[in-house]
Figure 1 (cartoon, helix red, strand yellow):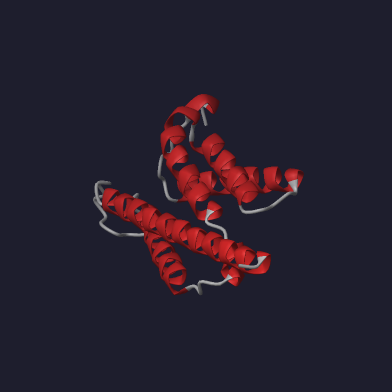
Figure 2: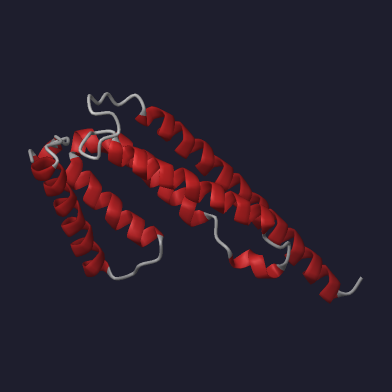
Length: 165
């Protein structure tokens, strides 16, 4: 067997392993998002699915997360078993999901604004942004805008945490 054939077969094995890891990651994302979606229905709201109610935005976000996870799974299953698919990364969706789980644990003790700014900043970094100052500014501005929109306009209280906001 020539060295070239060995290299090709090794690359094929690496591609298939990468594809399998991507499919497993997509399945994990589907399970996580479906679990969170079921949990959204535990949020008590006298207004049902009214956009001003506390259940609306979590339902919207987790539904979108589930749909995107299913799309990622389908794409992973349909992806060709060639070296062209090897550059597809499974790291980003798994890392963002881990950030969302970490966020769920930190939002109460740290508070909505601080935890959300950290989530946005970390997600930008995981997704490839390398503009440190811009990422910090955008994360803080988005966290503040969403906080003000929820607390002032929708009259939804968010965890205050260490900042007392």
